[in-house]
Image 1: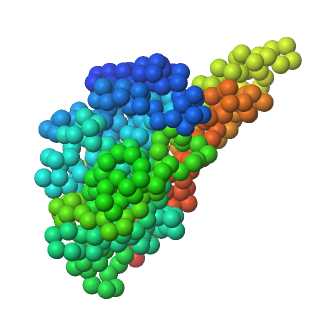
Image 2 (image 1 turned 180 degrees about the horizontal axis):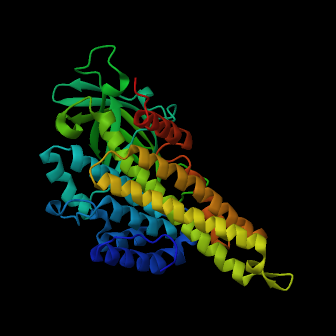
Length: 401
């Protein structure tokens, strides 16, 4: 166990879970991650191992067959998994956002139908907000649902769907004007639909097409796709929570969990980058001594370790705030912003420590260097986080008349 990024106040169960996950990462993920990533190959054996460990049911309540663990436990597991390979943490993140949204907002029938199979990993979740021309402006969604008898007909194109091919349940956010008069605020006329589909690519159910994987700079292995709806018919009982117009609030609640997850991913990748940097610095010799003995390298290591420690502390704080039942959008935004920025900086410093070898695909740091930028964008850009943080600070520190 490393000296950095320790978490005080954990239960024996939490420590046992984290020990098991770390051993799995060291044995089953780190040795194969770079090879799989270079081939852009889905890590099926790793996913099967996560199923056996019960991680797909980690936060799902025990009454539905899950482990009923806290967001903190989940975030610390994600941190460990991202330390091994960030793409694997993405596979479980989208699954858990959907499971969390079902637990918090689903009808009893929806929870009973989906959650037990999600806990076993038999149903795999993904969620879809973004669109090709949308960026961070969720209120500009153009995909639409129109009521037709006991069904809704969905049309539109969605973008950046993590697990788009391998998932079998997608929570899709679309505009639904039914029951909402013209002039209603955009965020009050959105609905989340629970869309079941076959795994794979092409037409995965009538009216629903997953064209194929988007080729990316990093974050490989996990499939990132588009989702095209053309006359997709969904029964009314697959409106999340059974009521239209609540989709924006449901998705934002899920994204708060997702932002803690992205912060945890940043912490994990930064930890691995530090491990690689501090190890290489002690092995590589220049001018007759290990480069770790040069003050310039020691300064880098000091800065890297401090950033790892600070990001971890903020991530833990955000998770504990959510677990306590309190609003945590400020803390989650801060943690996501800081952890993703520090991750990029720690990875770059580790890359610099490796010198020319950091540019070689034989070295793990090359993969991390391509993966870190995704965290600056995923679950809301740094600029969006700063907007959220700034608005919440003004709420908290508003001048009194």
